[in-house]
Image 1: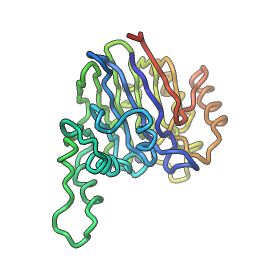
Image 2 (image 1 turned 90 degrees about the horizontal axis):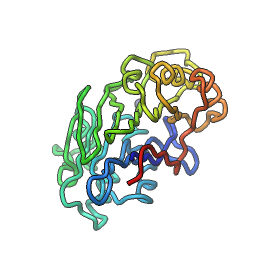
Image 3 (image 1 turned 180 degrees about the vertical axis):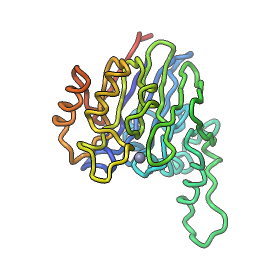
Image 4 (image 1 turned 120 degrees about the vertical axis):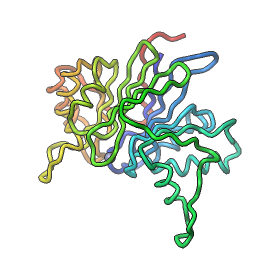
Length: 263
Ligand SMILES: [Zn+2]
């Protein structure tokens, strides 16, 4: 069984009472409980994560890229572990793009004149992703696929051996996005742009591009996410549905998607 709980789905900036990108991925039960991965640590998603799981219980954290709307809560997760009285048995593995630890360490260093930066490796185990890498965590397999964005970014294709869940992270329409979504039971795809901007570079999708990608890839269900909070959800899903050829979902905080057999 795979379960995805939406912790934050706002694109680029949060809305009132709403959070930026963050998802709790659970599945691949081995023994008593499923593997738990917090995918993207956008602003506000930590608060929503804590409704479902303590940070110390996570098997891994996945940071798709270092834009603020996808990683801002990671330093706060460090504080939860360091000062919140729930020190994990071992450092929590954090998978992210090249240099994520240095980037976050610089951010965490409060003394600008200091020559040494804050080291978070007492609470986090540092892993740098590369394209095509497969990570096995309990009964979950995560495949990192580098997407087309303005910085190094990794979408994730997750499976428990049965169901497949694909998350675009941030990406323009590209071959990699199609491979990521191929035949997925759920394709959670970003749609940051309602229409192409004047200075267009293919680093985000429109709802129609998300729909076209999902249709071409044979994804069984499409849910839009990373839609800016000032965009109209009905307009976004209408555009995506037309291109996809079927009804399209719209991710909101608290939504849960489940696939496969319950055990
Ligand atoms: Zn981004």
